[in-house]
Image (cartoon, rainbow, N blue to C red; front, side, top):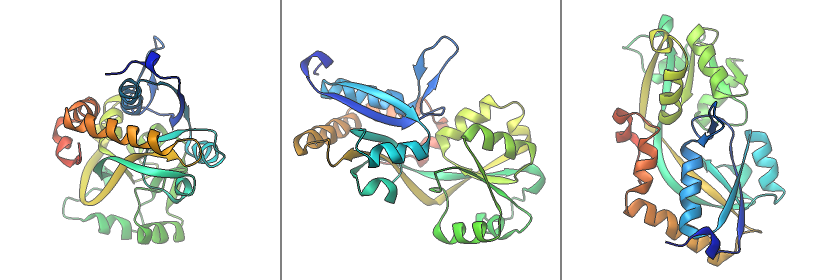
Length: 247
């Protein structure tokens, strides 16, 4: 495997600025699913990378204005597509979180969407947990409450200020442990019928074709030797690993 000193290239990578994708603990140590994935990519490329954490709106702006080589881990998005080539890394499903006061095991996810009493939390700049028809119904009825970070949304659904929200398995695994009494107040329902990808975008202007091929090969090698699965398994619950594909 190459080392960073073998490569004269330095990649600027923009990443989401929230746990468990990118997190800084009380001792100042950085960890997270995206952070570890990008570090492993750096090692395999033999190049130095600098990871710049930021919120979703700024990620879109920086990438569109050619201020980054790579953005990830993100879902396929029109906001990135005009400036980058998408490279899938894995796929998973969404989870519906429902405050227990509104939970009924006999109800489907569609039933919650149609229930006018239920307001949904939604992170600013994402939208990827909602189907087009769900967006139309929820936004049209004024049933979306936007928040700046997952932590805010999780606290809101736990307290009942919003009654439901969608999330990913890895993010759920982090916050259901971090927020006191969360599991006493909220039920999580996997939606195996809604698959979503996580991947990276390579800048069309800043990444050469040969570099793009090297990056794709490095990701493929991470799958083959089990490294990608090991990284994801550190952040997703064991029972949710069945929902992760292409690892």
